[in-house]
Each structure stands twice: as structure tokens, then as C-alpha cells.
Length: 188
Length: 188
DNA sequence: TATTTTTTTTCACAAATGGTAAAAAATGAC
DNA sequence: GTCATTTTTTACCATTTGTGAAAAAAAATA
Image 1 (cartoon, helix red, strand yellow):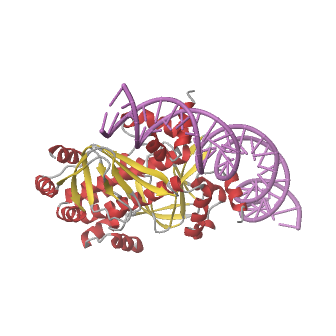
Image 2: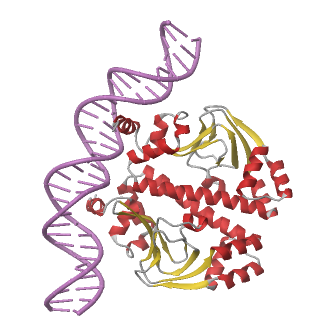
């Protein structure tokens, strides 16, 4: 928990009072491997600061699975659309490993943000970063073909390869498992 | 200019002092049709509040053009990555029509955000919205094929169709102009 | 109106990816 | 270690999209 506060403070400096209030609002929440953090139609009511574990955020379209993103330790998980609008989500989130998180409710975050300018700024920073990552992903999906996206993933997220199935990776790249296998087979 | 302040205040309520400071920091900037707001290697130093006109933000990959987004009146244009990090952009922004904007420098925004909690919150809201739109786009690019993306565009952004070329639309959908023409020909 | 430029369509062929299902390999449970 | 389950590969054929270039249409300019 201290590490989480520390890394948040590192993202955007928090004053002492803010840090204390923030800490008091955090609650431990643990998910065993295979359990769902979110299912379709549920409303996402929290930010989850991941201390340990792995979460897959995905959706279905015609029985095909599409992975929006993987979240690992030291990342922040939420489903932004459902969270911000407090409306039912169209995504599913599952713990691919036993996962330890500290959570904040939207209500607490709203109040903390109102009370502490420094917390408002912290969350603004969090949104900024999420936005930048998503914009990169859009460009990548448009500019690169599946093979290039696969190789980029293996290059930049090697540590994740041992923790997810190729099926999930295919879902992240946006192709079928068969196509991914074919790409992997082209050893050139 | 008043309309811009009004619509921002509408997005997230600003107190009087913040509104005055914000107004004083705004500067008119006009781009004639065909002129560039941003070219590769330039650093994006502003937020542009578009009063009138149309901006295309795009990139090149192997001589192919990919459109990140179109910005029209009442939208806010910036290149987030370059703007936030103050680093050279990999995108190009061109005015597809004569375009009237009011601009804020990053420096002014940073200072205003530090001084006024309500302005910090306003920009947080702006980032939130941008993030939500990008997340939708990622899901759409993965889940829908080119034909579905084209039909969705014609449905939801009919007003833009008269203002952009099919080449630019193809670049937005992520396919070649030839492929788009073929999709349009399938009148079924 | 005639001319030039830009935009859009069309076409034939190549390449990439999808759909499906079965086989092979790896992993996990007992 | 054996068996059952899950994951991964393979293969065949269908569909989509890309390439490149030329023709047609539309728009801009003289």
C-alpha cells in the first residue's frame, strides 16, 4: 500500500493531507485466478491499483474475443467508460492470475479530487497517460499489419508472453488464433 | 470567443476568476485552407479551440496516409503526445478548410491549472473525453471490418462526408482508397 | 467553354486474414 | 506417471484487402 502511494506521489506530487486522505480511502480487494472483476452489464465503480497479478479487459463480438488491454502489477485498472459515466459496461474483466489490488470508489475519488487540488491533478495525469497509450494503439492498429504488431508485442512486452495464452495474444492483436499461429510459423 | 468560454464552462464549471484568466490567455489564430498547423518534427505547443473550420490529423507509413482524427468547430485540437511531452510530433495537421481557432499555450495552461483548481478539473475532463473516444475507436477497429466502419461513419458523421474526400475517409477507416471504392460499390 | 487538376472508380492479380475442424503438443489434476 | 483438459499448430478453402495503373467523373481554373 505504501508503494502505491509512493508511485502515485511520483506520478504527480501529493501534499501531506492529500496523501493521508487518499490512503484512508484505499481498500484491499483480492481476486483469485479466473474470477471476474467485471462482467457485461455491470457498472464499474472503482479504480483498482494492482499490487500483484494480471487482469485482462476484453469484449465479445460474434463469439470472437477482443482484448482491449492487459493490466499487471503497478498499473491502474478500470473500465473508463463505465466508470466515468457510471453506466453498464460492454466489457469483461477477468483475473488471469491471483490478483491483489487496492481500490478506490468513484465517490471517494470525486470527493478527494474536489477537496485536494493535488489529487485532481494526479488523476488528470492518469487520464493523460491512458490517452497517450490509446492513441499509440490506434496508430499501431492502422499502420502495422498483424505480423508487425505481433513482433512489436514480443519485443516490447516479453515479460507478458510467459503469462498469457497465444489465444489471448491473438485477441489483443486483433486476429484469430489460427492467423497468429501462421505468423509465428513464418520463422523468417 | 465568448461561445468558447461558455462551452468550456459547460463542460466543467469555472469560477469567475478562472474564467477571466482563461479568457485573457486565449489568442486568435487563423489557418487558411491547405496550411499546416503541425508538421513532422515540430513540437505542438498549443491547445486549439476551433470556432470554425476543419483540421485533419494524420501520419504517413510507407507512403500511405493514416488519419488519426478530424476536428471541426466546437472541438479542441492538439496532438496530445507532442503537446504533453513537448517533443517532436510524428503527425501532421492540416486545415482542410479556412479555420478559425483560439489558442492557449501549454505554459499558460500549466499556470492556469496550477492557479485554478476549476481549470485543472476542466482539462482533466477534456482528457477523459478524449480517452473515451479513443477507447471506442480501438474497439471499433478491432471488432468491425472496413465495411462496417464505413457504414458507421456515414451514419454517425454524415455532416462530415460533404467536407472530406473519400481518400481521407479511407485513411481514417484504415484502408486504401481502392478498397473504399469497392465497399461503396457493393450497394447491397 | 475549354483546359487542367483532383477525385473517384474500376480492374486483374497478389497477399493477408478468416472460418473451421482435426491433429499435435503442452499443461494440469489426480 | 496417467488421464483429461487446455493450448497450439496445421491445413484447406473462402473472403477481404492491397497493389498498381488506367479510365472515368467531378471540380477547379483559365
